[in-house]
Length: 359
Image (tube, rainbow, N blue to C red; front, side, top):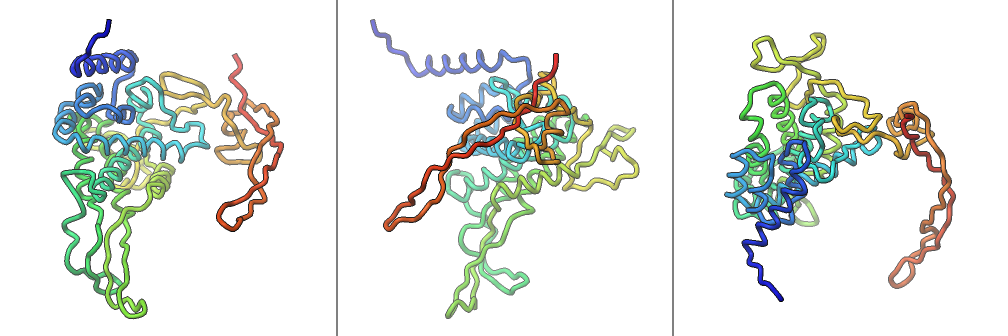
C-alpha cells in the first residue's frame, strides 16, 4: 500500500530530525550553526537554529535571501580559520552534530582563539553578503549607490564606474545580525565578543582596493574609470592572524562598565586590536570541555622549529615515523594540441606523527 505524504508533514519530519540529531548535544547553540543548514529552506532554518535570539529570527524571516549568504560566510570563516591554524596545536577544529560548532570552549573561555573565531566569522559574513550584493543575488542591495560621479585621489581625477562593492550594506547587516545576542547583555565577555566582531568587519573594509581602467589614446590614461573592490578573503585571514598574534589581554574596570588592559605596562588597545580575557589551554590533549581534539596522530615536521615542528606540536611526547610511497606527476610536457603529458614518479617519504598520550 502506498501513502501520500504532504509537504507540511515532510517539513515537520525534517524539523524533528534536525532537533533529534543536533539538539541532543549538551553544548549551547550558536548562529554559527547556520553553516550546517544551508541546504534547508529559510523558514526551517529560522525556526530551528537553537542559538538564535529573537532579533536574529526576525531578520531571518524578513530577509530569507540573505541567510544563504550568511551561511556561506560562516563556512568561509571556518575554512579560513582552519587554514591559518592548520600547523598549530589548536587547528580550529569543529565538532560534528554539535550546535555550538566549535564546542563549549569558544562560548565559555574568552581566549585568543575565541577572539579570532568571532572576528573571522564576522568578516566572512560581511565578505559573503557584500559579494552577493555585487553579483545581484540579493533583492535588498546591488552595487554601492554612493560611488557615482567624479572623484579625486593622489593620481588625479577619475569617474566612478563598474560595480563598486556595497561593503556598507554588508557591514551594517552583519552588525545587526551577528551582534544581536551580545548586545542584549552587558557583561565583559559580551563586550569582548562585540569588539572582536567589529574588528572582523573592519578588516574587510580596511583592505578594500580601488581598481581602475584607463581610457585614452595608446593607453595614455587621460581618463580613468574606477570602482571599489574587496580583496580575496585569504588576505583578510592573513590580516586577522597578525591581529591574533598581537592580541591584547583585557579585564573589566572596577565600575564594570568598560574594558581596560590587564597589564598596566601595555599600551591601550585600539579599535583594530583583537582582545581576550583568558589564557589559552595548551590543547595538547583531547578535552570535551575545551573542544580540543588533542595533537595525537597529527602529522608534524621533524625539521621545523615552528608551531608545526614535532617538538612543539607533539607537546614533548615524541613522534612515530612511518614510510609512505607517494605517487605524483612529474616531467610534464605540453603537447600540441592541446594537453599536458606527464609521467608518474614514485617517491618514498618519512611521515612523522605525534605519539598518543601515555595512560
